[in-house]
Length: 221
Image 1 (cartoon, rainbow, N blue to C red):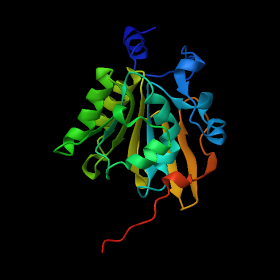
Image 2: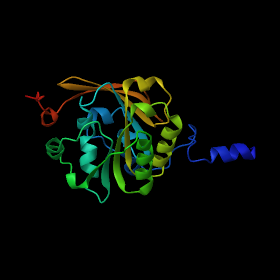
Image 3: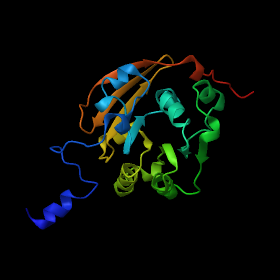
Image 4: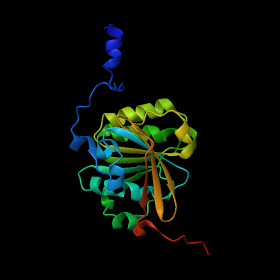
């Protein structure tokens, strides 16, 4: 085989469909906490050491309920949960109701949009994160190279890594191993698998939203 081709195939960011993965089922994924979703996710849960994209048109449609079981599990270990540039301050009572240990949660803000992906990348490379949630700013939606670096940083860690992007990003290229599109109402959250490495795409699952995360809107007086 050509030595240049051998060098290319040896790169950690090149995945060969013909090569089986060596990670064990227990260490490679974390059950999502939603049985219907686990049945359609490859290997039955959220992939560790990989980037997962969450695509939605709005915030607060049920994405925290979707991730709450994973957040609760990750908050019980020695490493931390990181929320990088969330659009709103996380609602602490709802997270507590889902058994998330708030003392393990850090909210990170950046002064510039350009620093958001860099910050998320450094958190993953540090090994301090059990779970990372990052919200991509509008100005960085088309930065494929930065997304690729984030995927590689996730691949080199043992963390769960979730990146939130708007729905229109579903039509753009992404290095993420798993991409989910969310559509929500007050009572239900619809989850569609847009892409999953090693598994089938196109499946849709509908989840009932938990009352603990349904807060009435309070209009300012």
